[in-house]
Image 1 (cartoon, rainbow, N blue to C red):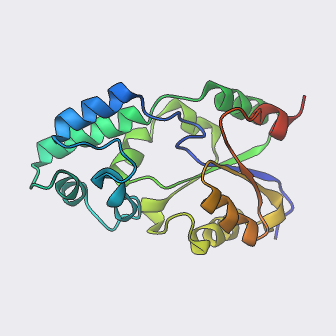
Image 2: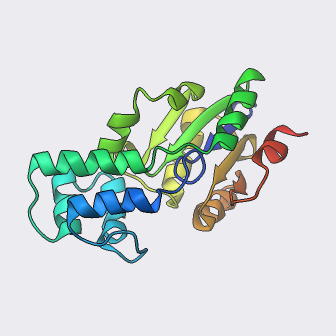
Length: 197
């Protein structure tokens, strides 16, 4: 196993900020159902979508409670990607700084296939030499197997990976494997924590 240090970042709520209320309203208008609440069908059916076990048509049909057309699905996928496209500029600054120092950066995100396809050419992907998506791997955080896959592919010991994620359950899973996992929360100075003063 190699000795190279890697920085492994989550996407949603780390690189991107939370969707705005206006984003949710636009998506709800298109879907015809309330979605913002944590117990909404958007979230209840999300894990299967993120894991690549559900197609867009199936996912949005479950979310809306009716059969949706491919055109409607395309609109919903686009609005969904758009609402997760508000960058956390502080994290972007950290990625820029780490990149300028020659650090090795990787991404690990629970993300459905249509969103992955829409982000393929996004500017932020250029920071990462490795990107891992749940829908591609058909594994989701916090499954131990997804972290094991990343470690094997990077070819490093767990202690050589610093992982940044906003979900405590994902942090706990990574820590169990010996990964240096850091919980990202509002107000944390990521620059100070990862790069130093």
